[in-house]
Amino acid sequence: MINAYFWNRARIAKMNFGFVSTRFSGTDGVSLEAAKWAEVLWRDGHISHWYSGLSDRQDEISMCVPEAYFGHPENEWINRRIWSTTVRSREVSDRIRILADYLKHTLYQFVEKFSIDVLVPENAITIPMNLPLGMAITEFIAETGIPTIAHHHDFYWERTRFSISGVNDLLDMAFPPRLPNMVHTVINAAAQEQISRRKGVGAILIPNVFDFEQPPEPVDNYADDVRKSLNLSDDDIFILQPTRIVPRKGIEHAIKLVGMLKDPRCKLVISHDSGDEGYEYQGMLEELANQENVDLRFVGDRVSEVRQLDSDGRKLYTLWDLYPHADLVTYPSTYEGFGNALLEAIYFKKPVVINRYSIFVEDIEPKGFQLAVMDGVVTHSVVRHVRRLLDDEQYRQETVEKNYEVASHFYSYEVLRRSFASILGALTGWAPRNGKNKGTGK
Image (cartoon, rainbow, N blue to C red; front, side, top):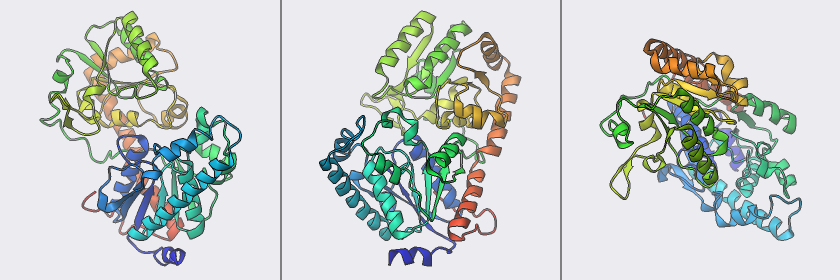
């Protein structure tokens, strides 16, 4: 019955999309990009609903199943027994199957409750943070034939922690699956090549996007005191590193750059904490900053996902509150699946120092952005370029305006909308009505 239901609704003008992941909460890349997809779909009259184990979406449009969260105790029990080993016990297999069956049952409930027409797994059949969830999604699609757009952000074969596994048979089956009525989308060209080689399926390249059609709002009263709150004077040069403190962010290069600028006005501000994977790295950065005589500031205790007051009554700011006040953004990552912080800096019209990580080299650099580019090391030519960006106001303005124009062409919501039109046409026969058909809300 449910399979026939999908196909009977396949050609209606307005559709219900069901986004599925282990988490839709906070500012991780998956949650942010899924929200952008939903906004673009809304502008064509479609409605989005959310299924996850951890959620900050509105209750009336979402379904939260705690067992779907990668941090659920049962899933953590399973993960401790399937990675860094080449075998698994019968008990582990049984508990994987029990959890997968339960999650599949809840997916049926989700789809029926919200009359879902198109399923959108968000990285849930890409990287096995919750293996039973990926199996449940795969079997649900196979049993129902529901049109599916799989949005892949980073595959398991890209992560060292998943390289030795006692569940290779399940990974082959579900991460990602090869099923009819499914379109695979990836965020970079390397992933497009790898899914074809490893899985024998084609994928559509849809990069991360930003709403460049709507410039950022002016700084409001809440955020107009950011510099003062971070103990920065008007004369200080606010250099923002808008990332967590993890080794792949290459923050040591940002410290080296500031040290070579030899300007006491330069303050390097890191926006986020280290979390659970960078405490030793943070200590190394502090030592390096001392050696280079760099004023390094960690402000993760003042940055939150939403504006609020902390227990001491201090304002907490969002990352978007910080960007307008920055004079320069550093992004010296050694690896990124795409690079959201780069698009954010360009959106706020800030000059950027960037390292040539592989995805940048293949996907982004050819687009023609004007950035201060380093190739694994901070050279004197990079420092000279940065000095010009900081000192020459006309050059800086020309640079950021050019970058905004390029990003608008390649990474705007309209680019995503055109991709949707093609995908939905192939899956369901849907086409946008009268060109741009924008809704009135989010």
